[in-house]
Length: 283
Image (tube, helix red, strand yellow):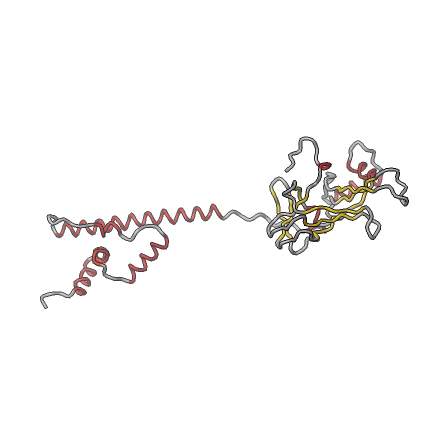
């Protein structure tokens, strides 16, 4: 009866001073589910060690008991406040980094023309800096595999020059064609024209090679392949192929994979030397 049990002693300390109870826990190793939970939570957040300064505190033999208790409580309180400050700073830093990393997604590409709507399900249109829209594959494509048709309006060289060169005199039909492009919001750059050579044959009576052109600039007259961007070898992964007269009597242009193409790659082909003007930065 004269000697209190250890448990009763700790209970008395808890009633007298909760802060001192926290300190005794770390000095003696007395178990508490609340403190274990807090320690796990603090370690998870990696914010601070659990009351490390209290464990390191050792009162000297000359220090009065009341002074030692006050110093112990002050040390525990100061450490606790410091730990809260560190945790607050850590949380603010995490929130700031998370906010900075969460960049807004780009707006969806409008799929409001026949060319865009012709895009197969395994391909996506994606905006690229300094290039405009491009095409990305969501499935692997094997070397030699068919990629897509390149379709558009078919022009002779004379018609192509009249409609795209300001130095040429326009016919009434040319003017109506230009006005139609403008009214439908279609461009008039002449940068989507693919030329195909027609060799002399007995049937055409040509004395020399002629050229015929497939113009895919108008999104209401073309397919998704008009969005294929340029890449110089060896970065290109598609090659164009063409015949001046296909089964329907018209020229045909199509693309095949010139190497294995991985998921997430942009589909590109080499535009060729005739496309570029002097001073162009070709990549």
